[in-house]
Structures are given as structure tokens and as C-alpha cells.
Image (cartoon, rainbow, N blue to C red; front, side, top):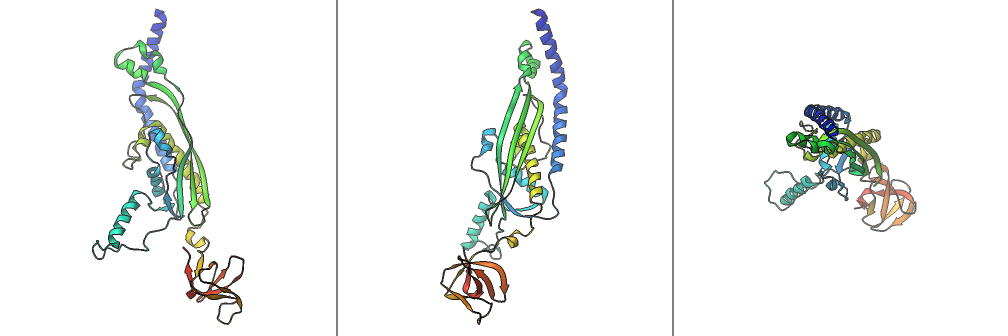
Length: 316
């Protein structure tokens, strides 16, 4: 029994010695891997369009003790240069307050705040998580033998554990104009390391500092989620890279309504044959063809012809 205890104490001492050297090496390794992943965030030579980030309703991050991933994704979008980021969160709420002040006449003259200035989002980006394992196969090695040692060394050894943490996330992009799910990408992150209850690696070092994502920097599962989202975002940009950089122009035209009684003509002039009469309020679908003040449209039953722009207004 005494021999068994001696072996355990010797083992504990070895682990303690290793633990004193390992945290710095572990942190260095994490920093290196983080910088490598950071470098993998894709960059684009032109912007694909404008994008807003929308939190999913399930708020999965709260169960992991993390902040909303919105700030994290904003960093990726800004650094990649692949999209123009439009705010639909807290910043937008404050902007709307300023607009309300302008509308009420409270702002100084020349403030130049008014209607028609807010940029439209072409796409909505939603970050979600499909599975997470905060501590799969965790084994508290130190806890098995830490009881043989007292004081600081015993506490340190008891804090050693081997953990495998994984996260699988998903990024989906919806086209605002068509409601099509334009793209979807899955990302995987994993990290097998030796963790210490008194410290450990972290993203730190200012990589994501000051961006409202401190829990992603300072927790193992947070770091893994970051790696998973970098993986997903990289795939997402690759999937959307072939899209037009002018989504507003390539989207189907807005429907129009007839503002007064009129007729649908076979050719773009007043002498064109009448295809049918049109009633006020009728919804028409532009084909994209125009000729002077005339626009080609079709009705709900497939009749096609030309109508004067003076008789049309955009449907809302």
C-alpha cells in the first residue's frame, strides 16, 4: 500500500512539473493556431452585396455561457471585405431615434438626415449551431491522484484534465428580395488539449479584443465555436463568390399597380392594338423591357403588353 502511494506521489510530482511548463506552451500553441485560422478568413476583391446579421430565436449561445455570435460574425464580414455590413441591431435602433428627431424638426439645419438614405440589405445572415460538446470524454487526471498531495501543488494537479471539445455550426443566407435561401454552409471546430483549472490558452492577445466577444476568447468552447464559424464563413464566401455584385439589378422587378384606368397595348405607343382593359389597383408584373415612357408588363393570367409609366406606381 505504501509503495502504491509512493508511485502515485511520484506520478503527481511529474505531472506538477509538467504543468508548470505546459501553460505557456499551450497558450503559445493556441495563439499560433488562432493566427493561422484568422489568416484563413477569406478576402474578396469586390463586395458581393450588402448583408445584415440576424440572431436565431433559439439563443443557443446562452446555454454555453457565451455572448451573441453577432459581434463575431461582424468581425469576419468587416475583415473579409466580401459584403457591405448594414446594421439592423442596436446601432440601427439609435439611428432610427436620430431620424425621428430629424422628422420632428429637433435637429440642426443642414444635418442631412431624412428619407431614402438607409441602405437596403441584399442578404440576411443567420448563425446557428447544430451540435456542441463542451467536454466530450473529459478525464480529470489530476483528481485521481491530487488527494495524495497538499497545498498549492495538490490543487494544481487536481486541476489537470484532458478534454475534447467540438462544435458544428451552420451559416445560412437568405435573399431579401426573393426569400430564397441563397447559400448554406456548415463549419466544424474541435480542440483536444490539456486544460488547467488555474489558467489555460485563450484567443486573447487582441485578436478579437474589444469586440464584445470576450467569452469566445477566454473559454475553450468559445474558441472552438470561433474556429467552426471561420470554417463555415470560408465555405459560405466560396459558395456565394459566383453571384452578381449587383443583386438589386439582377433580382426580379418589383410588381406595379395601375393608378388609374388604362389599357394594355400590343406595342409601345398610343396606336398599339388593345390587348385588354385595366382597372385601377390591378397588379402587373414588369418583364424588364422598356421603351421610352412605356413599360412591358404581364397580368396574372399571362397577358403581355405595354403600359405607360404615367399610369403605374410601385406595389408595396
